[in-house]
Every structure is written in structure tokens, then in C-alpha cells.
Length: 164
Image 1: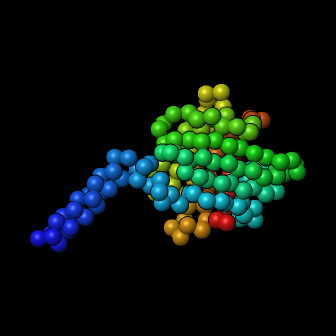
Image 2: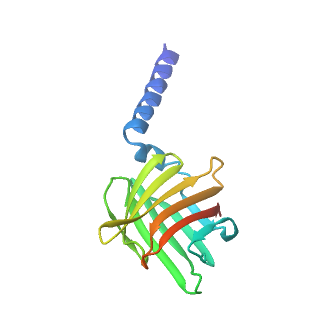
Image 3: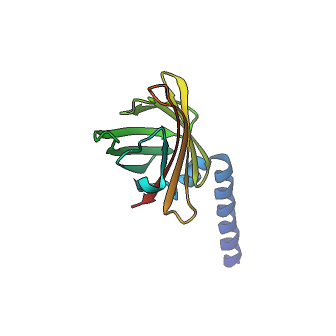
């Protein structure tokens, strides 16, 4: 009798978690989010149009409630330090971005456990879209972005990051 109750209890718990993943994937995936961690740009595997690419770049993703806190630092192609930071919830709303001349707000949407879409805005207008995907083995993150930069140039980038 005790064993039956245990099996029913575990099955109920699993069913509850499954329903949570369907209704609120942002919460269900937050604990095991493969984006969480430190990522270093592999410049040799990345492509920046127009170039040149940054000399180096490191992104740190951390859990922040129902969303993510992202801090990216590096050295631009011109040798100057770069920094972009934001905390974004998966709520469909604009979230402020600091340190980036191309975009000042971001909307984050979780596609699945390994993929996040970012809509980047400047002055309330969409200027770029980006998709961040982590490989199944969790060792590589690829960010594809397209749109316009602050100089009005069309951009198309594929940034490949290695987990540190």
C-alpha cells in the first residue's frame, strides 16, 4: 500500500512538472538553463558583416528570477573596451540595455530549452533580431544576428562562443 502511494505521488509530481513546462517554460527551464555560465567568443569561427570583428569578448549569463542577467565585456576592433549589460525577463516586454550604441532595449523570448530569441530596439524601434542557441552538449553557443547598426549599416553576424 505504501509503495502504491509513493508511485502515485511521484507520478503526480512528474505530471505537475510537465504541465509547468508547457504553461511556463521560462520557469521550468531556468534551473537547468544551458545559457547560464561564462562564454568566450571564438573569433576564428565567427563572422561579422560588416567587419572587422571584436578582438575579444566574454559574456556571462546568470539566472535572474524568471529571466537572465547578461553582461558582455571585451575589446572592440579599434582596441577600445566594450560593455553591454541587461537583465531580461521572458515576459514580452522591453528591458533596458546599458553600454551598447546599437540598441538600448531588448525583448527576450525562450524558444526551447536551448534557444532564446532577442529583439533588439533603439528608441523603441526594432533594429536587430538575434537568436542564441546552445549546442546539445552545452559546450558551444552560437548567436546569429541581423539588422542595422547605429551607423545605419546592415549587419549580419554569427558569433561562436565556447563555454569557459
